[in-house]
Image (cartoon, rainbow, N blue to C red; front, side, top):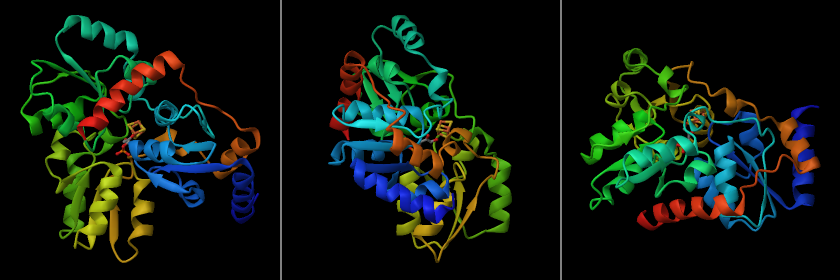
Length: 303
Ligand code: 13P
Ligand code: SF4
């Protein structure tokens, strides 16, 4: 089916189903174009919680749809491709975290939103790349802090807050592909460009950045900063959104190798199929949901 035809069918069916389509900033252009909202991981869940739509078509990876389901259990959250997972989130299980907590019984357990609902249920505080520093800074009265699963985000937060963190050894296989020499090369080609980097990148790359920010903060920074050129140190999919939102500015991916294959699994055809079948539903059990929500609520209370 041609894109124009697919696009029309998706819009018709979306209306009939009372659905809203949410797309993460890394999604394919064809998916971003058909979405009602684009955003970073938490932003999308918060949009999901506020919408009147009965059905949420979540185009992203599994933990993001789960977070939406945790925040709005009365809505049907469906993923066009439920096999789209986040390898970093899969690097820690609830049992792993339970064991770590047993080794550090007095520690506060802080976890990145890139975790499964079962892991979130074991956390004291959830955090995102936008607010991780603020969350850790708010825990002044806690002697020890566990931070999972991303060791690079932990390293960044630890540097910013001056707090040693008990970090899990997880990482994002996409962001580690961005190397300091990539930034050096792009800087040579574009000396006036500002360097924006995601905190999931390795420390030597983070150290070269003008701004260390989440994907939606990159969109905000690019819009609000006077600079005309930007080197984008995150998954390449964000560049499409940045160019679309800022047609007079130039954006250069730090590395073409920084592709998240799971983020590319969703297509317009799969969105249409999901709307036709109202599948695959992502649902978190009430028991896990209530505990996971506490960690998210504590984060929201801080920020
Ligand atoms: P953001 O929350 O910044 O969109 O990041 C999500 C993610 O998976 C980064 O790799
Ligand atoms: Fe997970 Fe990395 Fe993909 Fe983000 S880019 S969804 S952290 S694997």
